[in-house]
Amino acid sequence: MSWLASALLSLIHALYRLFLVFKPLFRSDTEPLPITAERSKLPQHLALAFISHPEADEEANEQYILNSVEKVVGWCRAAGIPQLSVYDRDGILARSSLELRGRLQRSSRKAEPEESPVECDIQYPLTPPPSDDAESRPLSPESAPLVPKLGVTTIHLPITPPKTKRRVGALKRRRVPPKGGDARIAPLALHILSYQSGKPAVAAAANMLLHNVRQSQSNVAPNTWPPLPTIQELNAVLEDLTVVHRRLPAEQLSLPAELGGFPPWQSRLTEIYWDCYPPTPKSRRNTPSTNENCIEEAEFRRALDEFAHAEMRLGK
Amino acid sequence: MLPQLISSSVGWIRDQAAAKAEDALISILSAGPIPQHVAFILDGNRRYARSKGIQVKQGHTDGFYTLRKMLEICIKLEVRCVSAYAFSIENFKRSPEEVTALMDLAEEKLLELCRQGDILDKYGIRLVVVGHKDMLPERVLAAAEKAENMTKDNNRAIFNLCMPYTSRDEITTAVHSVIQSRLDDDMDDTLADITADEIEAHLMTSLAGSPPLDILVRSSGVRRLSDYMLWQCSEDTQLQFTSTYWPEFGILDFMPIILDYQRKIWSQTK
Image 1: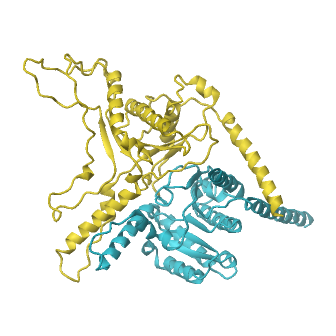
Image 2: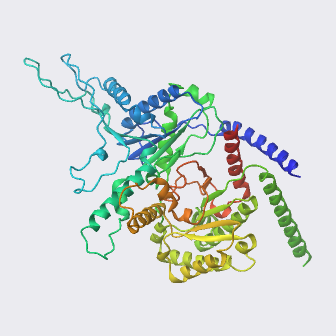
Image 3: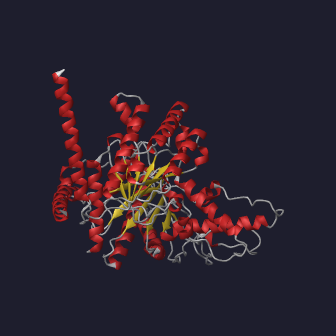
């Protein structure tokens, strides 16, 4: 009878597949609100997790992710979201942080050309990405507590070029305020995460706490229990996030969301959004820029709309 | 008298037919890959109660019977481990009346579950209460310990009843436990760093022998993890969010979840 069960299961799967193919057609295709629309609630910290297709071309994948981050940074700044974390498991973003920085700098200049008119042709060298504060070490290994390696690179936008030495006779530069106050684009802290920022970071925090406990143990009398690390110490090291999840490639029939190693500690109260429907022909026609090389703006706007409607009860 | 007899006979026939159909569906689904560990966030009991115009307490009771029903379905499908988020540490913030009602329900149902012939005994399920147990009232803790002791030799499946639980508390406890074991080990004077795998091995679900989490299901339409199994579901776990309130969740809601899992496994083996 197992052959009968297998045959019936295949039939059920065939019907389910048809259902998944036609389901998007029955979705009410209400246009999501514009990015800058007034919403009852906006995430203060939005996260974008890229879950790559394992068979996708590596370079195409990289460009897709970088293009998407560039777009999402602009959208977040337009919406007034002050923090954005971007994640990919394999560390593509972490390795490409310099290139990403350059792109964001160029995008920023295009968006706000009046911001800093340059009256001479001094070329500012690209500033290296800010070093991860967690990489610092005390001068003496016996002294201050260690700071854990959290595997996070942060870029603050707008990116301010470094001051250079003024050449003799060079003009003193004045920053000209942008014209039209309502066109200002908000600043943004962009955090670049990889798998190392998740479970390995919790392990790093544990090592920090073990070191601290051992240090303090040397200062207490024998037979005294060592002070155990508290939950507040872990909280102080790691922060909450909101997640938008993009799955590649779009032609795949919808599958449930998976977090792909996204930092677990931060997901506690995170509203999880993923676009489980591939873009319909109608939605592609309605979208001004149907760019297949990056995330679609409509998905971002839908995520903000859903977040605005989410009800947080916090256990009550 | 006769109409009542006919009505109850029709009802009995309908229930028998539904049970047979359910068993048939379970047999068909079992012909494909089955997840080893499924976790449920039992959300929506209160909204369900409000929608039906019944008391919240009844909503929670109906939710318990749904949990029991789903546990049975999972066991018949040969799911090796079922976890359920029954009570969060944060839920202590609810009104004292509701918390008391929930603790009363927990005590009553824990004792009911470990009765001879009941579901744990019938299917050889080992009950493990996962969470910050010292926050439970004495009577509930006693019932939990009784249920755990009575089922400790069962080995067909594991039922993790998470109460009161938060994932951050579980992770912190695991970190504490690893650190304490390093401190206790006098020979270990440095040097090997604590790893993520070591922390994972000290999680309460790991200590109970739970396999890796394959699917996490949350009912009632909410798309959050709410501090449940954050570590366990961060990799290779399908997240399923269904709009059905938990007391109304059944095999027809569960079927597409199993089908999605099977699609994933088959796509990985191509």
